[in-house]
Length: 111
Length: 112
Image (cartoon, rainbow over the protein chains, first blue to last red):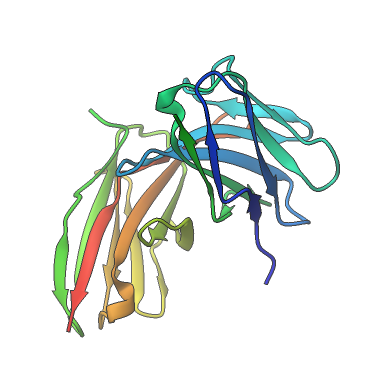
């Protein structure tokens, strides 16, 4: 069964550093998403991406964040200057309609 | 008022029993609804879409009540493996794609 994959599974970084989280969506899907989940809290939508551009973004997705599809398979989330409050699980998802399939997540720890 | 609200639970359910819970949404223009399950420290997994007429998938039944703006999930003959947090997802279709809103989840604990 096709699945969404994410790397790394855990990333530790120092405050102020840039991080790039990587995702490989399901190959025939056209829509891609990033979510975050702070420990013990709900899943929060960050951004959706279609046809090489952002479709929707939440108020969380400020200028510190960017997304890219650098080639035909990868979808990345970049956080330019990490803050302590960026520590969370980051999930990538993909879909060919509204039914989304999630990757296993990257746990980001900012120290 | 929160955009998507769920009773956090936990709902403690004896194995074999039935459990049901709701999710309310605030925006009447919301058009697509889903239930996901999330196991501890894992990714959300799609359980089922919720159709206007209601739909069933095995032991799971989902209903949509547009007039009262809620969706429901009923689990029959609960199994230990049904223990999880159930997330309600509501989508407001926009000109570009959709705004995806997750509820905080309802925790279900099935006990032997």
